[in-house]
Image 1 (cartoon, rainbow, N blue to C red):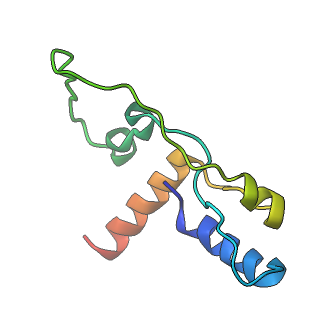
Image 2: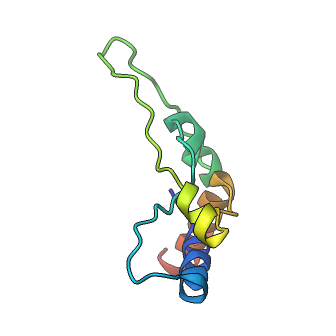
Length: 98
């Protein structure tokens, strides 16, 4: 998950600092995030119960993009926390879509 203002900041840095025509650089939050960390229901202000069905098979995985090159080449990293990004996104949605 990446908040749009963090992506815009990255694009601005690339325009300003990029030395070569083509470089592949990951741009992301920078760490793996569990489903529990999203807390979208909590940020929504709704009272919804979530039930986990632990009887079903699951495969524990953890994936994240390595943002080392974004830091090294452009001095970039995400400034917006996960929860702040969710809150801002929900506020925008309420103001513009609902």
